[in-house]
Image 1 (cartoon, rainbow, N blue to C red):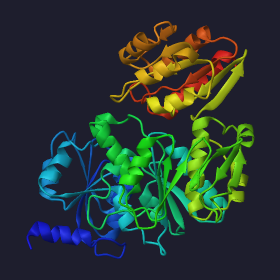
Image 2: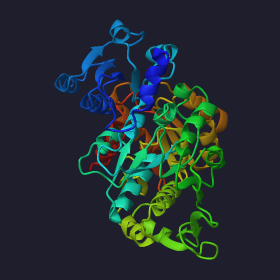
Image 3: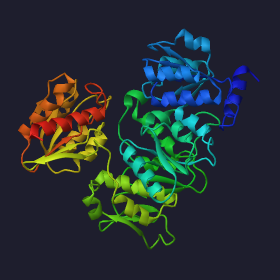
Image 4: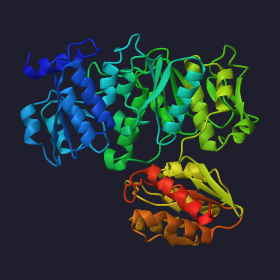
Length: 499
């Protein structure tokens, strides 16, 4: 057995918290929340940990000293000497900042060094608290966080110990190491995390149930092509044990299920806004129904809630209803009752910056959907309103918005364009909606962008319109994130309206 074979054999055996992790040389890339959680976990297991990061986070750097991990700060445009001399056996990557063609990752590949995500590490050590929690895995271009939060909420409402984690902002490893333990972890997975998943012997994830909510162009700067992006998303279904939930309105998600290598007996469960067939979730006469998890699914259905009831609590936008159906399918597969779903939806609320009504004045509604960070999300948001002044723009991440502009041109009263690079947005409107009035916000300073955008939107809006911040783009060209972008929009609206 060669040294590389011996290393691979050892890694394949690291499938438990109680495996022998002592002395394993692990390079952790980055110093974000998930990266620190990975380093902390590995140090606790007895591994030899080196963290390499672009920038220093003082508090986390101090804690690395406490836990016995080392830190190197380097631009990482090439492989630092500290990394090559460390000679890692595993590289752990937790952030989309590190693209597959990153210098360190290409070096690792060339030298036969395994690359794990923090999700894979979490799966390997999931039995720290026994019995180990089942995993319900959720991905999709849009709606992941809402569906993850809702599924966890429904599980808890039915008496299960459940936690949302993963890309939602709570590292998987923090949930795995919680001393209370859980019955089920609801794991939101980004395409970045899925890219690195199920590549290494011993690290394959076996979800209880899984879903890809939808598929549209996004993150092509990371994946390189739509084919590779779709391939990453499809991994969510690999090894699923009970239910592969897919979107009947999105053929790509059904194809993923059909192509997935699942555990024998796993069922395909469709969801959609139309009438459900057997083994589906859907809507009949305004009633959300389950025709999958009941004995007489050929001729009967279980009522979950109604569109009228969802409307009273602000959950009736079509894309939100789709998320509710998907979450319901996932938790019904785990045994949550239909009655629990009905009762829990009465008090569930969307996250901030997700089609959040900021104010109404003069017959104009102002809505913050700053979390619509790609064209697919903006498309879903626009569908919820009849007449819109659309505030959009930012970092488009290599994705075109032509289809969204063309599809919604007739409902646009006007457009306000933010972002450092206006030209891709303006070009799309020249091609597909040349008659829609457009105002370009020239302000470059973060503090001035939203006040100017709100003033411009107000000049375009008329009674009955919705001024909708649905940028269809990432925010980092002008803001620290979508949350700051939404907060500044909301504050600018309140200031403009005198409230």
